[in-house]
Every structure is written in C-alpha cells, then in structure tokens.
Length: 429
Image (cartoon, rainbow, N blue to C red; front, side, top):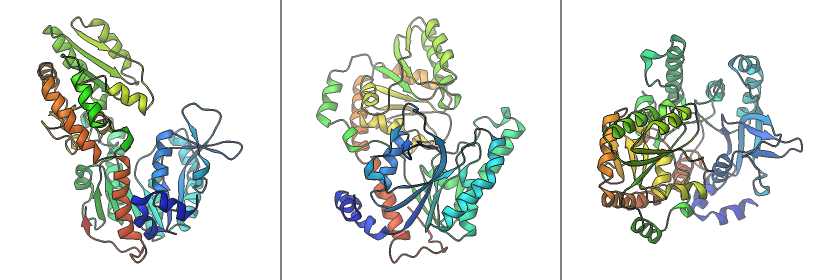
C-alpha cells in the first residue's frame, strides 16, 4: 500500500500522518521477533496488531529488537505483505545475563547504527536480561536524537523489599534511578497512569502524556443491545472470574485467602481462575479442599473473540493485583459490559471509578475481598448497572483511541515545522 492510499484508508490519522511523513522513527522493543530462513518475519499476534497501528501515522518505521530464528513456533503470525515496508534491525537475544554481557558490544554497535540513521527514538526501560533502553537511551542522548520514553510498568519495584535479597534491592534502586534519568533525558514521556509520571518525572522538562494502555478494538465492544440482553439472561447468583498470570504480584494469594474465609463461613460462591503460572498448582490444591466455594480452573483461551466470549460468562472480573501496573484485563472486561472488583492500586484507580464501573478494595486485604464478594452475591442489579457503565467507558478507550492521542502529540512535537532538535517543551497532557 502506498503512502497516499494508507492515509486515505486511515482517515482519523490523516492529519498526523501528513505531519509526520518522512520522519524516520526508531521503535525499540524488548520482545523478540523471529526471522525465518526465507527472510520472513514472524511476530506475536498482539505485537503485530500494535505495529500495524503505528503504521497508520508513521510511514518510515524501523523496529530495533532482539531477533530469534523461526523454527515453526506456535502462536506466531507472519508479517503480511501490506506491512512489508516495516524495517527490522536485529539485536542479540541472549538467554542469560552473562550471555547479554558477552553480546553487549554487538548490541552497542547495532544500536548506534540504528540511532544514527533515525530522527526520533522511541524506547523504554523494560527488558530482560539487560533492557535495550539501558544501551539505547544514553546513545540517543549522546547522538542528540529526540527520545520518547514509554513507561507501561515498573517491573523493578518490589512489593515487599524487606524480603528481597540485597542483589534484588540494588537492581531495583538502580533501575528506578535509570528510569528517572531516562524521563529527564526524554523529549516526550508516555505513562500508563499518573502514578508513574509523578514518581519518575522529577525535574524533567519533557512533554508528559498519561495514556492508559488498551488493546480492545471498537469491534470488540459488545453492542449495547447485546449487553442488555446478556444481563437480562444472567444468573441470579453472580459468577466471578480472575484471568491473569498466576504469580504473587497478581494477588493470587489474596484471592486464595479470601476464598478460604468464605468457605469457612459456608458461603456458596463460584469463581473461576483462568491462567498459567507457578501458583497454578496451589490453586488446584485449594480447589480440592473447598467445600462450599466452587473454584474452577478452566483452560486459558487465546486473546480475542474466544477470550471476550469467556468474559461474558461472568458477572464480575476480579483484579486483585498488588503491584502498581495497569492491567489490560480491566478494559477487556469493560468491553464486554462486565464490571471489576479491583485492588486500589495506582494502575487500577486511574481507570476504575469506584462504585460506577466496579469496586476498589485495599490491596492485599483478603477480608475486604471476601466481604465484597459476599456483598456482590446479593447485588446482581448493582453489578448490571456498573457493567453497562463500564461498557460506555470502554468506547472511549480503544486501542485506536490510544494511538490517536499519541499520534496527535507526536505531530505536535515532531511534525513538519515543529522541529526535532534536542530542546524540550514543557507541559503535561
């Protein structure tokens, strides 16, 4: 598809696309892509979806990311012909910290060459075993290239520092310091919630944008008539679901404790946990021990239509995380007219209106979660009202809407006539 055709086909982005035409944009990603022996590129489907959205307003896009060989791995999709203009620069994909150190000279050289050829560098601070941003961000500053820093999670922050090892605490402090430096060095900082912005901005003079992350498409949002019909047919006794990776940071232990207390009180309740992870075995053991609470562990389904259909089987989604990340599942639930019962963390409270689109509870409080679940069993009408309000909220927070907001800011800062030198514009959005 030529440039004119693409702009015509993506009318909402047309203005930003014209302003950014010819801008050489380097997108640094810590997730590996896969290269086949025939030169074909294979990607995770969600990453492919996001890259396609970037191409709606950026016509010269280069991806700098670790590269692994493609050998028929399941769950990947081939880069389609209409995205063939997308360029990839391969970084090493080490499997350990030691291997990353050995590969560091190659990472430096390839990053330097890619940055030197671009006009704008879009990076972050995440990645394992060594974040690409640890190399890219200082190089961008050294080469006086405008830097865009995106903070989607603060993976390094410790839920319980007192129980962490000295090595882990030191790594967390160094990563926090690097994240603060990166935001200070940036021309544009993008954060999924204001907690990240406020804790990392320091004296940064970057343009700061808070934009909650969403992966839902307009076509994913349940039509209002279907939402009303679904609630009309919902069981009188609500059913609950938790869909997440089964790790401590997701609050799995809190849910386990809440279910034990409800079961001890003889409360009959249905909750399904959908996910994989190291705590799944504990959940399976608990399911066999509970007498009144029914704890199901259905197999995970692929993200997309099957996952949204799964969510529609329930009357509330439990989001009990104890970290400050903004989980994707909240907008997923909203899109299907399902309210959430979520922990009152920085990432959740920004997008959950307490009492309107769900309920917020103190993080890590099993008693509060048990009490809310008990109350919810007799509040199907309230859940319905919150679910319908949540669906309306989803309409304003699609993946396209997120990219439209980003595109407007990029056009303002880096579009024709805006200049792309190292100077910083003060301001927040």
